[in-house]
Image 1: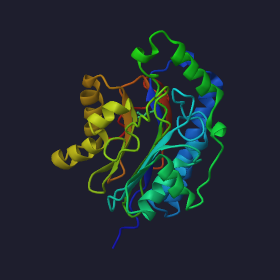
Image 2: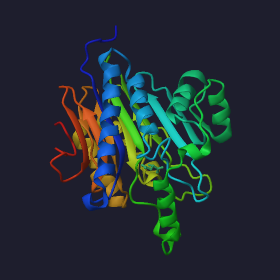
Image 3: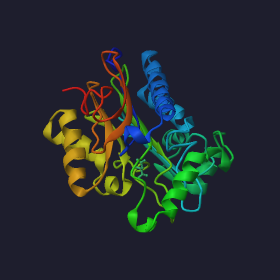
Image 4: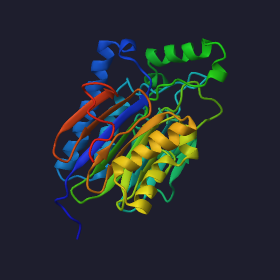
Length: 322
Ligand code: ASP
């Protein structure tokens, strides 16, 4: 019988990147911290009430998708053509069931569509118009394309496109994709990720976030992981799965394993980003190789942590528990 008194815990991220305190207005920082806090508390409340880790990560991500500060749902980055094209995925660590959508427009909560793909279709990933037609069968909420677009993202796109050699210099170094990982009272792990992808993307580009194994992975035997960063590298290095696989093969602790992949494997490949991860005991690790990562957690002991920068009084550690 499933255990029902397992310690619960949840971690979320709102993206990793290079940002200085000087470049962040006090108001924006306050809004970001507030959204992170609301999202992690909403997810934790689900767990506390005996809900599943799948419901907890979905609840947290819905809040972050609606928060315009993050690159997911409303506030998603814009494509080269000034459109929003979103990707999302979710995975159940108990069954290894998973669902994902890529390049969807108009869906207010892409994570709900990914969840439906997992629970109500025989498939793992649906894209574009097909995914939207599938979502319509479940009356998932839609919004006008303009509803998703914020002035911040319009300005960001203008800046990137007008930068000399924009094409060569590559995308914005701040990735504000959102993600969540959790463990529930039955000891079941879940992971989920939602994003608008990378600013100025072209040709129907899809990153790691909707790819099971790259941006999202969960297995009750090891851990649950959600990633943020330069997606092409996370796909090539199969980052989320790699962290879970290393744990299975080496039996080393989560903090060490996640740190190794983020700060050694990815860093030496020149890939910037980070992950949030939680193991089967509910220990959380949130390593990143950039100067900051928007992140929050409610640990097994009930302690809440909300942090942005690497070096600050607000960020106890990158890998939070031994
Ligand atoms: N990983 C995402 C992508 O490549 C971007 C992000 O983390 O913000 O699409």
